Image (cartoon, rainbow, N blue to C red):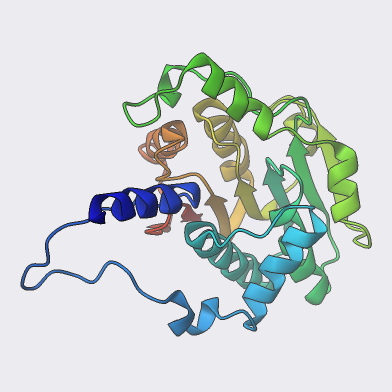
Length: 262
């Protein structure tokens, strides 16, 4: 009976994107399970959690109590707010928007700060993920053909989805096309903040190579998929890029994503 319960719990956590393990209790063992609502930032009435849930609703996504995602979105809000508050004279950009959850969050923050430039959003809107390369494969991320096709289609969205989520924001510029095909249209711009959420090695590397040279001092690039084992190519792209880049701050968050500050 105990084994059945343990198996059910492991499967339940897996559905939320969490890995659960059971071990016999030993002296000095860390406590693995905790109530995240004891943390002020993750209480339902905290402003950042309110905006997180509002973004889900606006983008037509269902609420799932996904703690790692909440952590990443909390950090994203913090970085976007910091860039907006500094009033760095640069544009904002997002590479990979899916249905507009993070784009709505960023846009709301910009509107609160009286943003007067443009927020440039790039996505293929053509059936989800591009094809994976060898850099996107690891022992943890191996998939059957059916699993890969399901994942690819899962991330499909349309411009109509995005526009619906972003109604009311007049500083949005949308670029339909595979990364980096539309980047040349903003090559003369300077940027204060860039959110990269394209999952795979090549588009992540292409985004970094294009935007980092155009990032203003003090500007930040957030890479959502860094450290996420399902998409190992994102971390490989960041690590490769940073080997030849002298940024002022690099920070990796424990629940996935990283910040690169120029």
